[in-house]
Image (cartoon, rainbow, N blue to C red):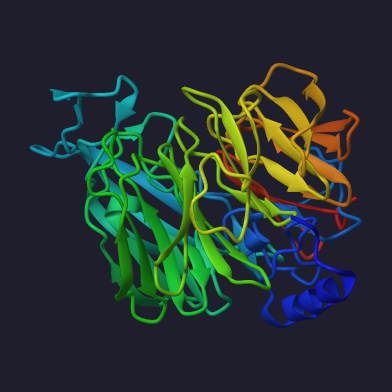
Length: 453
């Protein structure tokens, strides 16, 4: 599909400034956005328009503050103004008689060997941190009690990232519900979506906001039986629409895409990639899915959406937007690629290039329009990755479970510009806002800033 004429791109840019939600056809991010309001920031792209941020830090360099975080969680920090929001979980004692929901696989009961936690009580909390000082402003208990399902031993019950519209914060804990708070920590509403079994692996998908709606993708078990996607009213938590799906368990966050043509809510899944009208839930198009576990979240740019999965099969797809019906096998599938994808981290699209990353740090740079591979490179030391990359000012940050953040030069030539460490594991993806980089480690929240030389 040809690019829009320049005069229409100019109109689109003006439109984006008014709604702060338009997806640029080249980068996927609006240069006007300085907040980091949801999973992977503005439009879920992992991109910041800021320049002049520090690219080097250590225990004594460019760390403006460091705040111990109570409990355990993998949710990424979100930022609005001078407030940071994240979630955390506290494991309590074993509760007599408590046990997680049973899982069936091919008519036999299945227990994943790495499942834990379902016999304990948990306290799930929402935290608000001052972005200037690092002080915890408030800490609210959203849920306290037994949990519906197990979790993977590496996962937490506080892994979904909250979302905010600048007035309220929406924190999702899977089977344990969704909670809406104002910026002062007052509970506005809470809602339960029922039990969402996922073979005892724990929650992962995050809420997405659009106008007066909150979207949640709730895919279940290996069979897909009972899966759905739902839109709740932001003000009340009441269901606005709900659509059944036959897609097995996913941890990918849906992607809201706005263009001059229409808005689309794109969901990744093993069986199908499906686009919905966000206002009504009506299906716009679908195509054959990513085949493996849908954990990486979709991305958009160049009038396409990109989806991927890394286990048990590896698959990346580029799908042209604007289609209708079943797009499988049609020219709407721009390209596909069956290498280099991650089990957990999402890829990143920066300007003309899509960067796939494996869980071991092998980076594949591709021409986003054609799928042509420009390079395969790796980080300089052995590493494992759970966090997804972020990018700004011609640089891509890859943060590992060892606490190292590798700075990669954006573009078609592989070059590592540096390595920085916070000295503790990183599972959450960084946030960037107002000249600062916020990194959630396993024990602490860090503010990286040039103010601290």
